[in-house]
Amino acid sequence: MANIKSAKKRVLTSKVRQERNKSIKSAVKTASKKVLAAVEASDKELAAKELLNATSVIDKAAKKGVLHKNTASRKVSRLATAVNRIG
Image (spheres, helix red, strand yellow):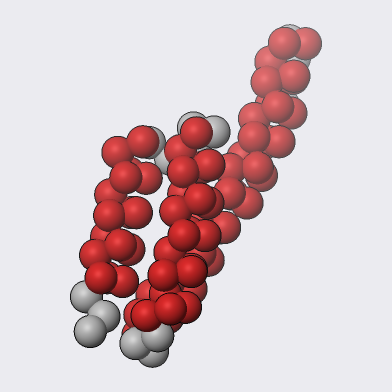
């Protein structure tokens, strides 16, 4: 454990941020899995609805700095491509 007051504070704040980031990343993964499950079931309507939700979650994660903007863009693009492939 750190001895300096500012270092102690950094330990605590980094722990809080780590938990927040973990929660946000988990939400991104869950939203993505819901889209892919709907695609797997060939349910175009549900997939489109879940894609809208996943896009929102991913964009919020990028806005908060949890995901890089290009990573977020790539994830959204790949999900959209999967949904559009449903025939």
